[in-house]
Picture 1 (tube, rainbow, N blue to C red):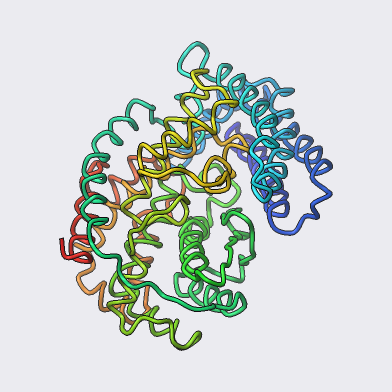
Picture 2 (cartoon, rainbow, N blue to C red):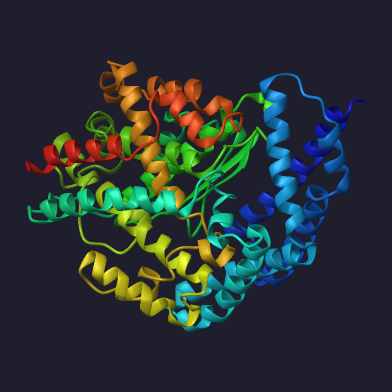
Length: 489
């Protein structure tokens, strides 16, 4: 057996074990008893130790040296395995195992602290997570920038300086657009009680409408909506609020974007390094374009208005145009996941700056809540009222995902480029969406991006699919055109 075949057989087993670890995480968020957190931490640490040992196994290095590749696909496999191998070798196994244990336990402590509005109860374990992540980042950076090293886990090839340049270009136009909108009367919203059971019925209907294969997935509830898995087992979660059904519906559409990406990757890449999304920014481009450019479009919301009234009866808006305005309402709020398209990226910029400061040692965990609240007031013009609306609202830092947040805004930027190309390629798109038919749009994404999985580098696949180098321009143009129309600016 040639070295490449031995390498791929070993990697397939590693990928399978990684999927099992992911399933443990899904269970922890959805079904695990609250009293099981400590044991789950031990379980996660044990499987992470096995995974780390496999990823850094000296045989992988030998196979990489000896492997002779044929064609672009084999070259991409070797590229991704080498990247993971080199990173794994830099991190001591004991540190990787300890991080898995601490972050598993921290996740449960975060959920409890969030429910109790008790930042002080969570701060000590977050301080431990931050210290461990700094140690890991220093090992990965080898004298370079710690935060740049962390970014490579989520958006390979990107630096904090590049992200800062994009954010600096976005901020003035976003702030100006927000100010102009908030000077206008707020559109009528939907009012009523929307039973959770009916929300879940409609949300599963929408998941199928957007191409989610329920034979290879499932929809459950969690504190924080997420997508988990790849290939033949891709699961999503959502949440319900009986006064705000949009939270459930659009969280589901968002997570279906992630899940559809994983489900639509070429089956030949199953349980290989190419059998998953190439980066979190590209992943987020799929969830955001499903949720926003498709799901919040005037055409699709006309269809959704009919479905809502059929299931819930009167929802206090009189027609599809009022419903479209309600879906896209720009209003004051604290929660990133509930933010409108105009303000969402401002939430990300806040987190990006704070976590960079944490990793650099310029900000200590003990000062984080105050720093968050001060920055939020400066950016949004009002104070955070309670921890669950501020520093405790996101799960990411509890599980050590430093470097993840900026990929949300990169995803929006990528989605803007893809949407521009999609509209040019599909002149009858709105007519299809008005009938609730998303296959025209999702099919275009499947063919041009999703099926390739990790074959191409992140910016390469966006440029290949959209025909332009990624930039913030198309996103900002789209937002200004959409909200100028909505608010008669």
